[in-house]
Image 1: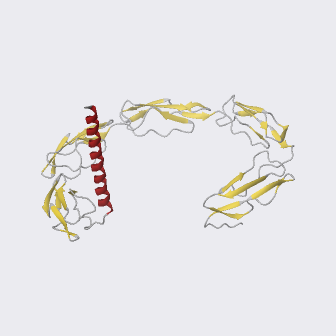
Image 2: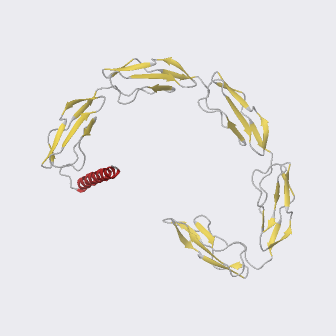
Image 3: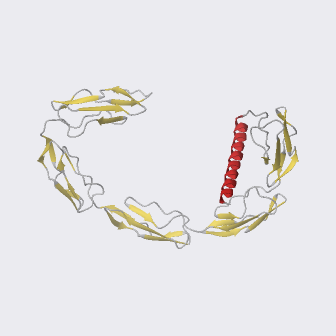
Length: 348
């Protein structure tokens, strides 16, 4: 009995595989064959069913009007005969209602294009708006809307004035309804000068004055030669320290290894270093914009080290060299200058 079941199962699987291969074979043949007739024209509001490319001799295509449309002329069935389609193109006429006018602040639900007879559209006012006139529901009847769509009026506040430098606004966004609060705060390195940290929308106007903040930290420390500070960045708040170290191949000559921001000014002078090991300073670039490099080299630039430079995509070499070598503490050649393709420069 078990053996018989196994044999029946194998026979069933073989039959399914044969049918699948036959179906795919017919589908492949159909797709790769040449269409006898071109795509049948489909009028606006009409839909084609029951056929697909390629269209073979004797094939029939059915046509229907979409929802909200009705047939005015043409045929609902056409045959591919001798390379052309019999009959006339189906023409459908829209019988529904036109698109509803837009009203700011009014939201619409329960209806979608095309608007067919008997369809209802429901309106409501969004947050911050109140009803002024019109109907909550309108109905499409014989191609026209019954009633007038709801009209809403904004009763909230306008966008509050942009925060001044060093101030950020949070916890409020459009529409600004009555009773809504907007909170302001000073960013790092700034302190409050005047104004209110919170303003409230009341009867369409903001109560209070937005916060004003003032930068109390230090300006960017002066640039240094031969030294760098790995953990020193904006904003430079009071009490912040910037620590400098000499670059490889350099030794300190003056200044302080640590400077501190105190009452908006830096205490001390940043460390200055000079090269003491044989080598070169970073290679010069004639015009940084449009130039890529230096490559295949890195600091410290030792004697005999070669750096390569190139022009970025869309730029072309105008002058200078694409490679330079550190020789006797100086870089050989001229700095590379790149210009955008199709643009000529004039040196004054």
